[in-house]
Amino acid sequence: MSNNLNDSKVNPLALSESADTADTNKADGEIAHLERGKFQPGLDGVDEEIAEFQDSSIVITPEENKRLKRMIDKHVLALMLGTYFCQSLDKGTLSFSIMGIREDAKLVGNQYSWLTTCLYLAVLVCEFPQNYLLQRLPVAKWFSFNIVSWGIVVAASAAANNFAGLVVLRTLLGVFECSIQPTFIILTSMWYEKEEQVVTVSLWYCMNGLQTAVGGLIAYGFFHIQGTAIKNWQFLFLILGLITIVWGLFVGYWLPDSPMRGGRFWSQEDRTKMVERVRENGTGIQNKKWKKDHVVDALTDPQVWAFVLIQFANTIPTGGLGAYSNIIISQNLGFSVLQAYLLSIAQGTWQILVLLSAAWLATKTKQTLLIMIVYTIPNIISAICFITIPNNKDHAVVLLIMFYFTIFFNAQSSLSFSLLTRNVGGQNARLRFSLPLPSSTALVTRSALKALFQAKDAPLYRNAFAAQLGCYCFSIILFVFLRLYYMRKNLLKRRATALAKGLSETTEDERNDEERTHVNAFSDLTDRQNSEFRYSY
Image (tube, rainbow, N blue to C red; front, side):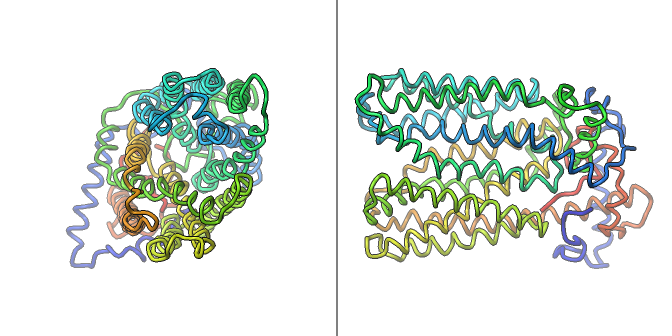
């Protein structure tokens, strides 16, 4: 069933009868692009493991599909949630500087901020190699190795007592932790149907909110460890690191590398059904072969560069708000350390509610990009208020409410990643460029954010919030472009399919999508090569 409204009816780019010739030429061009994939339907390009398990004749009832999803959730989703929570806690340990790590490690000047910068630089350098290894190696085993490795790094940080040691360890933390998001996107597209992916991505993004809610309280508890040979921050690093190591070993045991390799937990019949339940996705499951045409396809794909710009526009606002919120909470409201941590519970809970509501609405309406536009509007309101309302104690409550409005912007990240999992086909295209390019853009942008909130602009920081307001408006323009692009591509694919079948090029009704056989679902074609692929928006 189609995930969107009737493209031919709502598409503002639909051509009149006088443009039939030009439109036919475009459909012919679409056919030419499809033929450049050079595949034999249903045979060429299929991974050997998948070939053993695919069976398009299998019929999966709704009740059976629910049973299969529960089994998958138990082994995949549960581990993604636990891992993302561990990662959020481990990466955030440095932010608990109240414990005295600055003094004990004798950090001076910008050394403390460099401990965060070096982590992001490591992620930037290692993300492309990590994506390459994820395609070549068993996903679960490599994922487990990275989790255990960063757990060792976090635990070892308890022994660091100077800037040089902390820099080395924080850099290694970035090397191993940069595997998280690409692995999760691979797992989401590998195990879950398109209709399930919005909620799945949003659920593991909710772990950021959970970390915000409980991370501060955990740190506050460790803060009260006083008068011992081991410092309280060392206890925190050591215990969180050891927990992560144990969790990583469990992930290696409990998480199958793919639906085809779940023999320890499921029968061959169930594994075949798990493969077939994602056939209609059209994005494939796995393929370890290098394909140059996939790389070219990804680098020339407008949607990939749209996601790069979306990440750029998303990172600037979210990256600078943390310091500003501290001014509101600590200085203007005069909250104590414990009160600030208690307030973070409400902040984290609100973030979870925002993400879940956005996922529910996007799934219910099947209009992801429209929901992203709606969830950007509160941020525009907040930016205008930040620009116009003085940042002082008299307006602290109003500004705090406006800060909570900015949390709506978190829905952009989860929903945009769900679009990536649903709309990018071909393993080389997805792993080599479609995933790392947007993430790398976010990292580069985050590294440059220090120049945004400047002391000379205090206390209003009008320039910073004017830049954020521009990013919000630019995001909406990108969402509109991406929606129109997907609608147009779906329309041309339907017309190209009709022409290939010898039908009239006006045979473009989305009801004809029901007749697709998805014979090339596992042929490792990119979304632009696969004639039966339909974009979700």
